[in-house]
Length: 215
Ligand code: DX5
Ligand code: ZN
Image (cartoon, rainbow, N blue to C red; front, side, top):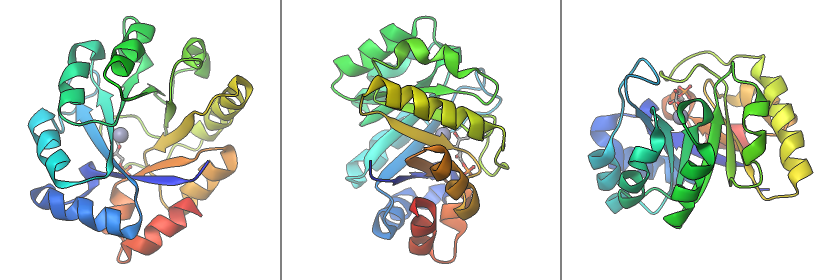
């Protein structure tokens, strides 16, 4: 599967979101990663529905929405209406993960399931036959600019094996502290989709940063 960079808008100049999305797209980032936080599932509040609708009208990039919210089924329609191409939710936050996946698919878009660094991969195993993407958090969700947690490499390898065993076409995404060096470690562990905010948008040469990430 082709390696992809998903540019995390949390790491860009949000006052210039349209231009920043264009800058990432021109540099070779195929996806735009949109972090949604509710101040409950994580200790932060980030981006919401009106901003996603605005950026959707501006860009053709694949919009990769990451819901860090409790009981995510409540907001699938809203984030699908706003223009998400993929919605990823946290297994820890859902009462019935299979129902959330079904709801996302009913909107004709891709569904992802995510685990925090401390959550065993076994938690998502029952859903591997249903999802289009698995997201392994490589930092505690909630804030950009954190350092990569090395212990998560083991989890990436476990997910790689799970995906390979399933025989399904599932993307393996990593998110948090991704730069040239950590992306290499993640590629070696089997990841193919790389969320990057701080490293990507703060690089002097953003095209070189994309190339460094995808290898
Ligand atoms: C953290 C978010 C990430 C974050 C990544 O909870 O899910 O998407 O923006 O940012 P960096 O690349 O700065 O770690
Ligand atoms: Zn994210």
